[in-house]
Length: 315
Length: 279
Image 1 (cartoon, each protein chain N blue to C red):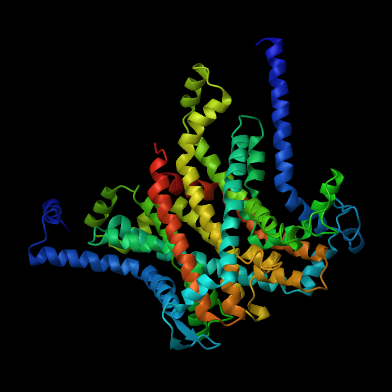
Image 2 (cartoon, one colour):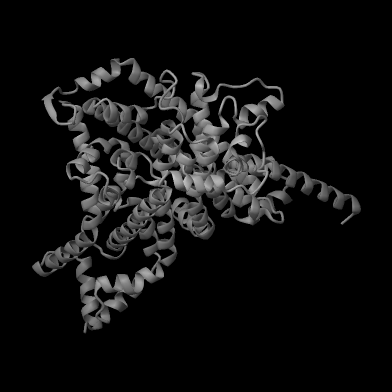
């Protein structure tokens, strides 16, 4: 049994710089114990995250045979090739456009849904549940549903447009509308998660703030601008990160709905990586693209945490 | 309250409910369409204008979807994969979170950064080497290939650590005095207290894995090992299936996640937002 005195002594020694060998041994023991607890996670991260990331980079500097074995070192020429390849530049442009179409739209609509769901009305919880329903929907099933809705002849969307006198749209078959159509599916899919998290954020805003603003005669829009929006900014920031990363990594929708077409108009970066290595056997070329994706996401994350987060209001 | 004010209130409420209903109908419309089409007969589904609601409780498409594609096998594979990943993540994340929350070891902050950095590395940046590794291990078309790469989670570790930090340190001191080892302290005291956070992580990781697409697409070719998300899109690629059978399949695939949504929704949201907002 450890006495109280011994406990006090051990606390004291941990505060002191571990100069004696006993203290050093205690530090060592703690470290080994922690390492034992961390090792299952660390092993998985090493094997499937850190080492593969390095291997991706090494792969991108080599030429490979059709089954992925390196045959020659080419340095950074793959990257040079990438920047001169109009198809890669197209993929880059399509990816950025897709991010631009989906992220702000999702956030704005979800903000509207959350405001509606936050109304003090009877049975509002039913509406809240409907607004958050797409959390349970996978990208594959959502895409299949929209594949039907987009159908040029039998689809529901063109029929409904026809009812209000709008001519049929080509949706996925038209070079101009294919990317916005995939974006539409993505926005719908992301609405659930966004709305749920915004609603939770809104419920965390103290009621007294609104009450005192009402006494001061602040209108509804003024209360939204000066209370809801600033206090919600950490939540919006969090969602911005989540949505941006999801948009850059979107793949399923493209694989089910368009397979990169028509004429590469939806050939986003991740789809291009998949096609180059899985079908064309261009391992090193695809690896170079995946490293570019890594750096884009790294830059986006750094910018977000460095610049935007400083303007976010925390309680 | 004057009569005028009361009338005005009734009027605003009616307008708000109307607005809520219209928005709800738009949001739910794709799911409603899927359910409708899954209950339409061959002739009905090809009719124009398209039907907005099923005309009868026609369930033949569900039978056909189950008979003509090994949907149940796909479903089984997905549930096995998701359960294994969920269990594995709960174990590895609990262990790691324990080290971060209860052991003052040198280099703790650095190690925590190492964990968090995995969140910044997109899965796609490592997918080619991972594919090559799994192929060279002979893990294609196996549950090993489907689960092992996902058995650790930085997000889950972070979530559990945040929760563990709310457990008073005096509890640990008391346990140590009673001669309780660290592993027993974790399993007998910390984990039962952390049940809400563990529940959140369980629901989250199950949903994530069940909805996976790119990885199972790469590493499964054998029909017996396909997961449900891949299987259901294959139904679409085969020309012999009409929309009504595909949609019946979609409805079947959505059932488990909707059940989980109804049971675990509140838990999931509470846990996720606690981590997210306070971050």
